[in-house]
Length: 501
Image 1 (cartoon, rainbow, N blue to C red):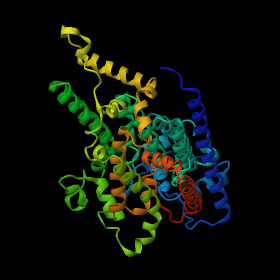
Image 2: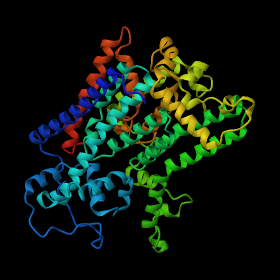
Image 3: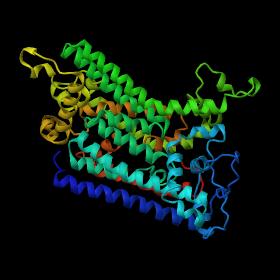
Image 4: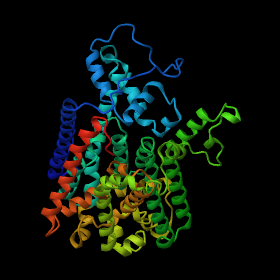
């Protein structure tokens, strides 16, 4: 593999510095607001004993007094909103039914870090404070790596390092930044989701599936990333049947795609089974929870509906108008990005990419085709390559094309339209559309800001708007004002336990 080009190496450093600087700015803002204002809810440091005193995973109380209790209290007092649940789960496991709304990746990582790297700090600041510190460190470090992967993915998709750099800096200072510096799962999810998509577009399918599967153990919407595998499988099966005339190869593609999707769903399904085992089994019929008796007992759906009132149009109430206004900027940006893409390439979007030109498919070959027919390399077809050799050749071919020669391969596309409007963006737009519709019609709409914050098309489109002729100054100003305002507002309200998103 050839080394990165000089300007890309410089861009890597800029993205890395921007990601670190954005986290330091958030940390400084949190300290500032916490020192100036009193938290709305001061119960964060309360830490009742775990329900199961026999739980071997719960450390026993320290035999000696904590050395620096003031530092421990300060860290515990900063644990707010969902962070309280994540720390409690890391400390005591899943005690309550509603705690199963929080997927296990972050608590598992917090527990592991608190028992290894930060274990010496337990007698100094206390176990719960160490868990909180572990959560903060994990979220901030994961965000920095997520920003680097975001740039790598953007370079491949946009074919323009400068546009990729603009989009990455926008991601570093995105409106949901406060959640990426708090004990929330957004950072870990973004790292594995964006990293998985980078590996997918680079041709490393198996690594991509592993990363995307891990993302589904961080947040429930991680299962939607299986849609990218479905998109790839659909087009590769079409290529095998209608272009290469090889039905058997198409069956192999479909089976492999189905197995990869199942693998991405597996962590989420396993967690639902874990909840069913803990809550539903071993109880008398009159003690069984209602969802346990359902034909398809899904704990996550029941929790969202029963405890948080999540459901189709259930949030459409006049009293929720301020929350709709709070979510309106991110939803408007998502809608504009989708509409602009659809209006620019309606035949490409509505055909799900099947009406893409030869040049478009060549530029997005890793998603749209299986590569050159292996039989073409064997005159007279005297012998056939085994499926394993075919797959390996395909992976090597795409990796070489993407990582070494993609600028030359995509020269045609870059010369005829803006980088944002390429065939590779189709599955990203479809994914964003489904996410935005779910956020608006089904979820608590105010969470849209952080729910959509890991969607790459938002930043690609914003980067495109900033340099568009005639609108660059106005749109650039509005986008940065929006991000800055939400960073200031979020760090002020969220860190002091006031509602934000």
